[in-house]
Image 1: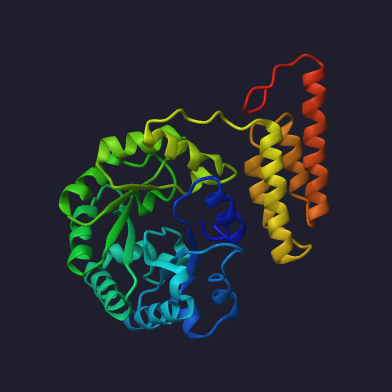
Image 2: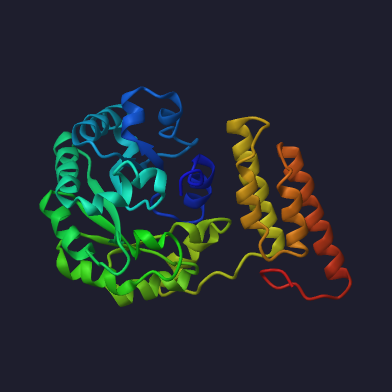
Length: 320
């Protein structure tokens, strides 16, 4: 979720029901150099009371010292520190960080132990089914993390070498849950609220983490909470609701990043999936630079939607 779970997306996710949100990946090495762009990732949104900070690196002493610095600077706004041992992106793993730490479990455990000893706030670790395709190491890795003293773990049911392809294996999450006594968070392929419930039922996990399923879809959190609580799942948003939230998302970004809000392009593309003439809209989105550019695209989507409705076409919750 690097480049995605910024303050704007976190704001909307909390409003739509997420119990906790995470920062983008924060480099411990970048923090140690007092890199301003890295430190900006720790900034809170207006009204954001608490956030989990996602820290990555491969040097135990640097990870520990920067975890302590984060705790001191953020104080009560810090919910917990999450050590990323699951990112499969090459520029991260090539440095021995992210999911590459699953190949060096002793180092991974040392990092977890050092961070835990350096802070008072809870420490969690997120990792994958394993690094190499077909080699599931998650249950044993989970035991090492528990022995290192972490307070909870999150497991994504894909191998690192799968990247984001194929399917997330829920059996892995269930096996991890059986292997440890600390809370386990299940992650992977939650695209609809009902899938949060089935993941908990099938794996016994204590909570569910939603990542890509929330892209352009903050409604998923309310759907998931309703499903888990045994309540009626809210109806899917109409085109009008999707555009309204997309517009607000763009506004939140513009207020923080000024007129040049290019990163809204990917969000706008996700929001416009399933809207009338969505592919045409996404073509225009690729040229948007300012908030006004996005406004014009959103206004045209609403105009086309009304034309379709006036022509007698039935509009369901995802388009035609």
